[in-house]
Picture 1: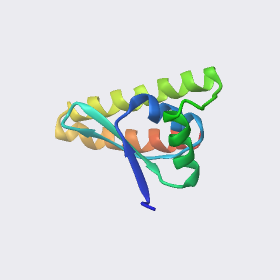
Picture 2: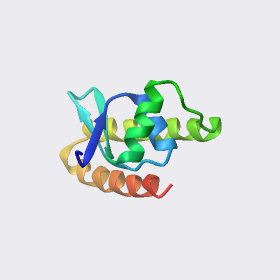
Picture 3: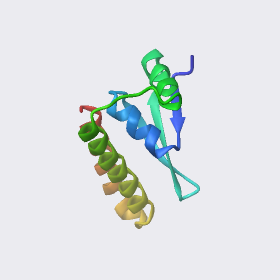
Picture 4: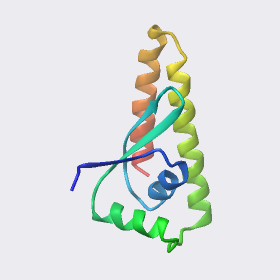
Length: 105
């Protein structure tokens, strides 16, 4: 099994985050699309299978909070890519701190 699973599907990423799967990394692809990387394990694979089979139930407020968090990550990445190289270092520190905070739950 691969050590990481990547997706560009916003709603899948939000669902995986809601179900307790940890986001390892986020990155911009072609300066337009955000790719989310998760730790790949059996829990993640089961969640992906359930998502696409439409066999999922999640707490609506938790899913809404996950959507807002994922959107914040996307905006932080896009803002960081639009800043000057001097400002990028500061934004990268912010992104790392934000990811640590989000991954803690």
